[in-house]
Length: 181
Image (cartoon, rainbow, N blue to C red; front, side):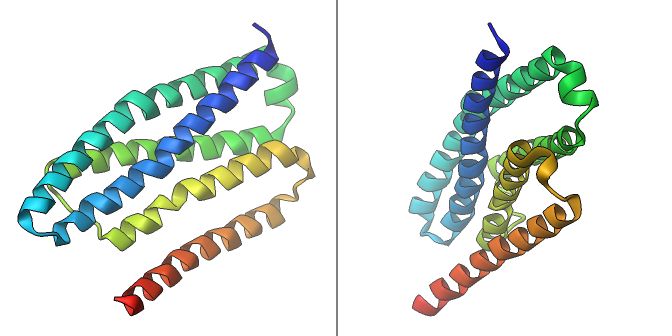
């Protein structure tokens, strides 16, 4: 197996992991919003959302996360001096990956809370939470693609502007939905 094979595996499992990171919080939104349904419908929906969350997390997200980490660590190991020691962009990328891991395990905590019928967040708050994975994705992909061509100050400013835009879009959609009710 070559470095390029491992890189391809890494990209495939990053994609799988992010698919789960995008879909799971959306299930949280639907799970919480099922509280507004009549009791019979609510109970059926919430039971199904609990099942879907468990399967998505354990069967897709956890294996994809581990295979992403293993393949990423393998690439760093194979190209140690070239990839890790000399490139500051990779250090920043790994910082975002640590943030993504925190996000991943916080999703796990939310699964456990929803299984116990503990509803700490509203559907709107969970919609906002859902966008955090998008921000991580943009930050990581731009770092990997642009590497050292990014001026870090402008990169951080751009990321913050993007985050504000995403969160504003969620708020605008919420306002439109409320007006159309």
